[in-house]
Image 1 (cartoon, one colour):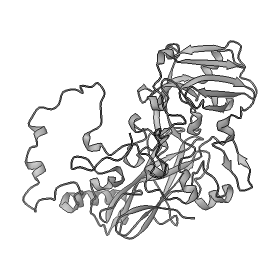
Image 2 (cartoon, rainbow, N blue to C red; image 1 turned 30 degrees about the vertical axis):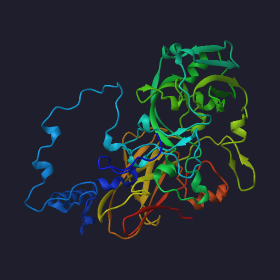
Image 3 (tube, helix red, strand yellow; image 1 turned 135 degrees about the vertical axis):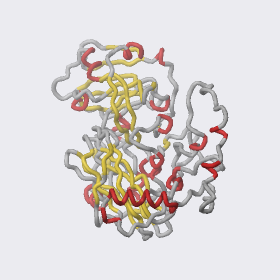
Image 4 (cartoon, one colour; image 1 turned 90 degrees about the vertical axis):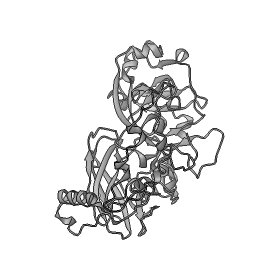
Amino acid sequence: MSGNIQQTGQVRKAPENFLDAQGVRAVFAEAGKGRRDFIRNAFAAAVAGTATSSALAQPRPAVGDGDPAILNLPAHSTGLGQPVVTDGYGKPSKYEANVQRRQSPGLTPTAQASVSFAPLQSLFGIVTPSGLHFERHHQGWWDIDPSKHRLMVNGMVKAPKVFTLDELMRLPSVSRFHFIECGANTGMEWGNVAVPTAQYTHGMLSCSEFTGVPLITLLEMAGADLKGERFVLAEGADGSSMTRTIPMSLIRSGEVLVAYGQNGEMLRPEQGYPLRLVVPGVQGVSWVKYLRRIELGDQPYGTKDENVHYVDLMPDGQHRQYTSIQECKSVVTTPSGGQMLLDKGFYNITGLAWSGRGKVKRVDVSVDGGRNWRTARLESPVLSKCLTRFNIDWVWDGTPAIIQSRAMDDTGYVQPSYKQLRAVRGTRSIYHNNAIQSWQVQANGEVANVQLS
């Protein structure tokens, strides 16, 4: 689901202009009285008629005339609605047609596009709808017949096993919420490439409820020797034969799943149907799709996808390998690049934070490029190795601003600035960029991607 959709009067503005939905005009001389008074005053100002209409709405009537959208009953209030969905699978409103995955404008178009980015700036809460989940393919996606798919467990096991999907689904299952982030997410920012929106800077990130069988259960059924230093090789069934090493230290906890379910339904084909590995906190390439084989060994496998790709080139010229954990990171999604603030007044700054090492403990937000910070509200639930939504109130006075967020996880790790990250990593990296993102709000309300050193 990529490409552009022509703007029509029946389609809500593109997600990059999300704030256009309602720009609230309110200038508060006494905003320092506290958040409760601030919200009360903002609400009173809106009720008094100081709110501006969005670019898509009709102009408000003159005072005393009444709002025709209230006075005149629309067709949906006087007639019969549509029957149940006739094609059997629900779809979003036609007015939300611009909320979609998109290919990066900087990638060379191909017949088999390999990446699509999730529209983070248009999402609420922490769960990514399955139809908007980002995609990354190494050999295109397949819709595999589940009745013919098999999962093999071999290597350092006493009784090698072959499981059908039906056999796996009869085993005790668990469901957990976790984020998945490509190791190359925000990769273009390493080279000072200011892609325009949060969808393109951070959109190789999604979060779902995954359902499946703990991998440790299958290894135990095969009589695996789980003592000492052990490693698992996970292999996919697509044309790239994606193979990744997973250390047993991650598997023993029971977190790693052989998953068949996502967001309450079976996996989508582009997400690895009928089976994929779920490795919480670890870069997405290790979440092997179309999972066909698990092999247990006593050392890392050093496969092609581990020696050539997803390694970090360090300042001394060496490659840093097996850097799988996605470190603590955050991004403000509203206001963010490509959006427009229509007027001065109250805005809710919101965004997402995550850590591959556990829970997000705190998120601070700055509107002056990092000189001053305020602690944001973390919205529940706050789960381990899962996206966390944060919010904070802001009164924009119409002057230029630089908005940033800085996350901390429960290990005490603090998200670094670009200066701090480059001091350790240099400037030649591609993967694992978790530096603080900056959005510049210009005096005319336009929001753009900028990078502070």
